[in-house]
Length: 198
Image (spheres, one colour):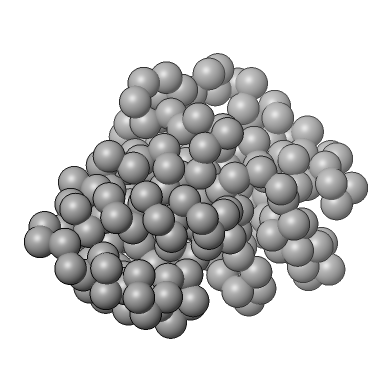
């Protein structure tokens, strides 16, 4: 049986020493490109957790690219080269257990757009846990009490989501969208997994 992306990433991260693993976690959080990984999610993550975070955040193909980038940034060129060779051996797609993750099609995310912007329509139509999401956004100060009331005043979940997108999510910037995505991953895990193509 051929090795999956998860297997390869786990092998690479397992081979890093504790100091290198710490640098890897820090550099992963320092990346400027979207989507970003929050420090609180990775600071105590072991290699197994890191692989899960990488593949959930960036998809399997993207996880390999990000791992190569971060490894090169922390001067682990040999390990980065190993991953690059694996990627080349897989062609434009990487093995994902029983399926192949295509590099084209509707699941491919525009690199200039945040995940929540890229999947705006799907999230508007499919989010079901909106009240607890609003509560958490209020706790994080992404929305104000007035905005909370305005969003709740809409009759349908879809209109509430549109109001959320047209106001606070447009204004909050990448950090606010990262928090929104973290909340969605917690409260709507199956929806987010589906949108990421897992």
